[in-house]
Image (cartoon, rainbow, N blue to C red; front, side, top):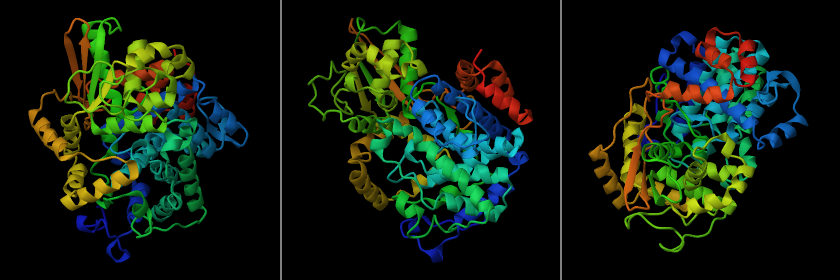
Length: 560
């Protein structure tokens, strides 16, 4: 770690003040010293793309009805100011504007990810609000976006093996917003470190029942983004935080990680989290993107997949995608697992492990569709696409019978070889390789117990691990790279049994929206131009040279 002594892996479970350096001080100094000229061209390209992507995501949700509860509720207390809420064009105080925009971008899960975390909500919208409020330039905005991603992504990675994951790492928005705001306020390293510490003094902990079904999920990024933004203003005014807060035996890692990995905070200025950017091409869980792409490709290649032509659809995917689907069904109070053959439709083989029993169409909501892979696939099959227009309750209710028919044919299963591909991709990153080396047999046994306690879940069994090793050695799918970024693989395979007895199959390893994909710019452009005017796209490609006011005006204008 730059300027600090990282924990030996053997000490990650018994943190003690005598053994540690205040990591927040190191992060604070790095953020304060970051200059736009220090950022490599590839990373800047990713930062520009993320700003465009998130503006499109926020505007997309604003066209639906799900965000009205946020916008109408905020209207009762939001203060007037100089920052813009993209959905309405209203000028609000920076914390209120950032929260409103983050809620909109969260609504349809049409955001983006980096390794590790959905840092985009706070990185973009805290930066945008504070830059506008403080009269900063677009170049300063872009620098703040980079700083926020690099700090927040590293904190998420350090807590990867813990009670929260994915979008439920809402604490990343505390430090992301604090880092972005501190950078734009020009705080020195000490004040920036205190801003990070203040933001984490009372960290957010997302609870699954409030995230996986109801619309309270919309606040998952909004609330901590506002808190982190405010923390930097408090730090500027002289407030202090506990700089040892991460390492303290009663501190952050003690509460948010089963196996803390402080070394994940290293590599500042050498490795860039933003180089792993992946924008979503379908609204919904990131783990589902490749499966939906495979299903879409099958339909184009082999003709429309209609109920008359299809007997069964099997989606083989990763452990992460299966767990997300399981959590969504449990949160929606779906029925208990049933023995094979009891209402699960026609199977595609005996050596499969269904996630749960059928997803009832009657329980489908925009949120459950986003986190249940079978429901996402059913919507794609009924509509011929999966976009913002389908993620509203009226559409789901109107097509309930057709969705039910497809859900009876759909099966989601775990293929350990596909999960092995995810792990192999992680090993290509220096930090990922270090993390996997930290997993001793003793650590794995402890993690297995903790995940069973927390989620009633298991890590991979020995049979799964063996199958995964074999799958990783086969290399039976193209790498699909050729773009400019660092690939994050989340492979999936879709097999369709047709009425005539034939089977057709498609596998996709790398999401089309990955910065490492040759289709990245094409996919991003199509997404942006659905929601924003061409002027916004053109301005975003040269963001740091644009007038910030003109840029925000373009983000608020209708597409076309």
